[in-house]
Image (tube, rainbow, N blue to C red; front, top):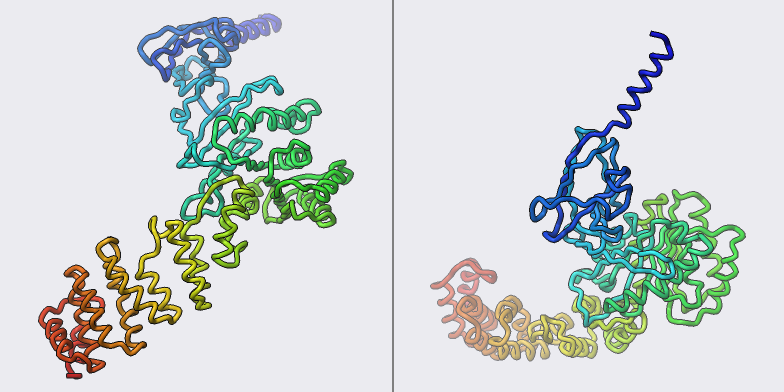
Length: 547
């Protein structure tokens, strides 16, 4: 056999291996009984990427299948007859499906359809929506995360995140929800909107699409979100890398709808035309407060981490009380700057929320806070008990009776103590800690009157009983103290009888007044002793020695 014949036969068999077809049964499980399913792919038997040519057969409520002749490798997708209704196997990228050989698996599961995404089927904790943009001439995917207890009657700030095709959206979402939880309340509950960008550089830099992207944000996206959700009017924008640079472009627009900017690893060219524009903007801006935060990663290329310093220098020459600016450095690289800088960025743009440092006294807080957060963030939120703990400590340390009584009224007016005002025991404790003993006595006597109305008050009264006792003794009113203890013993339930009886014995015998009452109380304690928080057998022996 000559050389040409050998080469011909090798080529012939290779061509057979490449172009020969194998009959294959492709099966798919679908999410809905009514789903009519098509397959479209890279060869004639798969419709040559025409979404409505090759239909699968229904074999059961949720199963469809087709038998086709395939050339390997085969690439394809499932649709409901249109590219608008593509079957989602993996989210968010949903790559082409492949069958590499006759031995490859040909069984698939469609989780949901692109025209009506079921986020539960995708196991997502956020919603997916599409905005049909006339300006961009395409549909733009949005990732939308609402507060856990979203209430349409409440107003929420909105944090927009570019590059939502990356993990940045998940990071922002997680930080926002963690920091706004009730036990922290570092920032207000906020809606988070991620803008998915398949061609991010075109969005940010291309002369035509870049301009349209800005108009898409201002004229289509924000109005869309405002129409669907209860928004407060405060919009913030989180941008990373090129997205951080784009934040500057948005801020300098006359129709800028954002008042919070978090710029993670930004960039500013040496001869950038925006330098003069930034200087002019910093100097002359007179609108509502803008919160402008830059985070630089010191492990980033110098062109990036020095950009924040360059912008800082421009700002320092053109300071403006309407623009709150921060430029912070972090030990981070181009990627880790997202997690490192975002925490400080969110705290910075929400610095006027729940920030009691802005209000030196409880009176300042009461008179100004609600108005200020409405002005700054468009939200109507009241006070929390956690906000006033620092004021309590300050008032007690300064022994300001006037401010303590103002705080008592403030708590009652706002229902901050379990939905009501402060109970008389805790009011009395405040007076006691400041050394106002007559007021302590008065409050604890009022507490006895309230015993039946407040479930937990008996335990609180009993646990703090030594405070009014000490106050009576300090004022020299021993008989009145014994009467007070007898009145409390009569009002409280049986479980507190022994402990209060011991205090009657102790006050009486130590002060040698109403001694017969003291002896009777001591005898009761000896006869009915059990382990308790106030006394033991040795304490009873010491009292007995006083008789």
